[in-house]
Every structure is written in C-alpha cells, then in structure tokens.
Image (cartoon, rainbow, N blue to C red; front, side, top):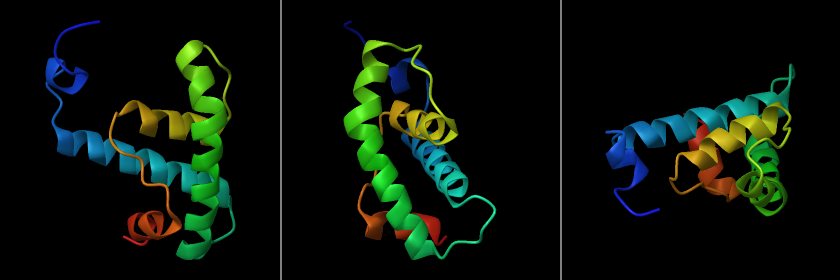
Length: 100
C-alpha cells in the first residue's frame, strides 16, 4: 500500500514509538522473570533469547495470520515489533534498557 509511513499518517512521533517499544520489551522481561527478582544481566539474556525466538518463529506467522494465538510474552514482543522501531536484540543493548 502506498502512502505515508504509519507513524506520520497517525501523527505519532518517533520518540513515542521508541517509548512504546521499550515499555513492551520491559513488560516481556517482567513476564519472563515471573515473581522472582532477576538480576538485570540475567533478564537481558532471557529477553534476548525470547526476541530471537519471536523474530524467527512467531513474527513471520503473525504477519501472515494476525489472529495467531500468543502467550503473554509473545503479546508484549508483538507490541514492540509493531512499533516499527529497531528491536535491540543483543544482551548488552537489552541490559542497558533494563537497568534504567
């Protein structure tokens, strides 16, 4: 479909999309950690693995079938991916995000 990028068409600024992406990634990390307090580095490792799995297995299916049933972690990652912003995927970049 031709036209403006989605963020411009909806008048959403880049900073808002990045905040939404970060919020969704932090939510996914919190869900992965569960009730146990998790050190930021360990949480970053878990989140990096979840992102890699989502990117290769779930995201392609979501793009073909928007009604794909997802668990809570995948739902949060889906929101992050839908922002259209770059998804940090290395443990180091995720650690920087989570330790804030």
